Length: 339
Image (tube, rainbow, N blue to C red; front, side, top):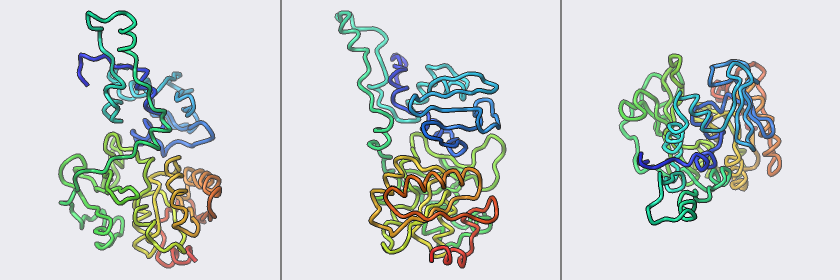
């Protein structure tokens, strides 16, 4: 955005939600949803109490009841996280979420011939689209490129994750040496039509403190997509659809003979993902929810059961051993699960 322009903070705040901002930082999976609110540890002062930081989804505000003793809106949160001014936070939000410059900028001063009423009209932001409508009406755009020169036989994939070369090639993943996903495992994410809309980058191992496990491109909203849905909906209708949390859960189940599987890319179901499942309800017999056996997975499992049961039959699977993840299942265990 040109520096000669002022930023209309009100328009920027109206265009983005706290849920989108938390997702951008890779924090959404650390929060528990309860009705209209999200709660979790404070990301600003790096707290650990799961109830010290609250977000009101309807009011689009946050509050830390612990060390920060402070609250605010989306721009306040970005400013705190980045340690920058509100103006700088607004510029970052415009870039990250690809906001329309004409909607969020206002002239520094009116032209000489403008009268006062005209000045007010000129600086008045265009009506912004509600966040909920933006999520449903503004899809992630298909990429105009593909990452082809990827290392398919990287030890993280074959040894650590136990994927076969066939599975690796089938999902189009591999170690990326250059570019935005450099030194990460690049994972293509497609929309229901089969168009790649983003690449997720997984650090190959346990990253150092401060380095996120996953990296997503700026402006991409994973809450609008379900990983592998483009292929899952093409499977025979009489087979159940399995829902898991992560990319590698999905790939491992696929490798073990369960191709009709999608991943939430987290432990919570967004409104857009729910609508995707509802839209393609005629493509599956019923749904099996197979989330991680931890606190976040258990909360997500219960939420999915309530919401999805409104339009289809839902079966929940629980693991006897705590902290178990679907990718740890053997081919025999997956076969038994599906019968």
